[in-house]
Length: 177
Image (cartoon, rainbow, N blue to C red; front, side, top):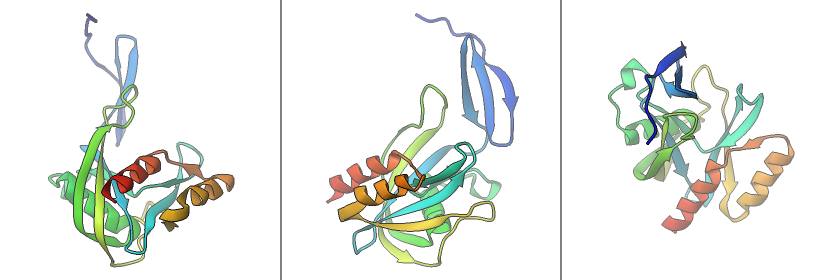
């Protein structure tokens, strides 16, 4: 059995805490309890995706709508589904009449303590154009489900990074069909 040593905090910023325990280094979230990942499809069978520049990768990424739950004072007590609804509306302009928790698990268990909660949004109603908050410049995409693999390949050919969580979202769409 491995002996556990005390956790050392190497650095703490506004959003992340860098830690070491023995020879293992990892990060913990300072703000937010988890990440809500939203799988949303319109009535005309288009998967709602978002594109935004990711500084950590120095390129744009195509992703499922997502965001931290409980990361601000006003959202500290929100549930996972409330956070998912808030992020979907903020990023895409859609409101879901029904939101279901599908599954959850670690984002990267060797690197981070962050958990991802996959939520399925149904009955989408367009409320505004989306685009995220003042710090984000989000482009909303509507990828046809029937040709989504071609859509993703085309985006990747343009130099856009494709978040693999999209493929997990497609799995859940298949399970709901």
